[in-house]
Length: 329
Image (cartoon, rainbow, N blue to C red; front, side):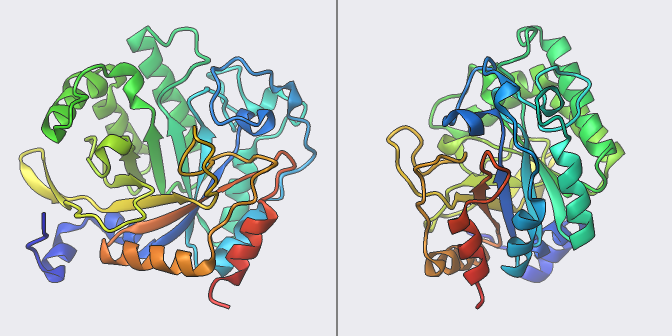
């Protein structure tokens, strides 16, 4: 479906926060958590966090190569589906403070981002395997609200929050019809997560924080309202992207963020590459491929984010660092 509006019209359709966020254009995602230490991509909230014994996290080594590559913002995994939290949360015992490392990684990263002029975004899974009351919708939604309140009130400016894992509370709509999918989300998933109230709360705490909600690989780029932008995982090929969607009785523009793994290793289970660090994974695209992805993102009026796993020693993979340093050199 083509956009029929001109760029001049588009500029009037964007909110100031959307326009500013779209100008960032290029970013990096840092994936780290309990799975990092167990050579796995997924877990069920049962892994022992006592293995997190690193001494430091080298956040400057994360940020500086990214800034030199032209990246304007980062997205840090604060909680994945397993429920392990990378910040000092008062609403789950399963967090980084209750490990031998015992430091708030998000706080360290937020300080480094502020010092170096890097905008900070967050990835937060709505799904949580660790929590014992995940089947109690009201209590579960309250936990999410309180954790997001911590994240948006204790770590400075947050440029975006990227929700994921909604399907744990949505059983309907899994046909090939986007209309059925969106209807099921609004009547089931959004209702059970209390997303409308969560969105309004986010805007009260940080009005310019961009809210996103990953709509799965089956429905790439579908906005799970209420949101400010859309998610596109591994959209590394030319697709027709619908920009205008009806919300609250009007057609509104929702920009898209394309996220691609720098790891390209196909394990058969985690294709198209790993999110987390794995010792035997040194797969990496060449910089010409990155330029191709940037050109694709520009054609889609999209932001491009490259995922980089963080090692158990608190560093980027050396191949990722070297690739970032090679861009525009």
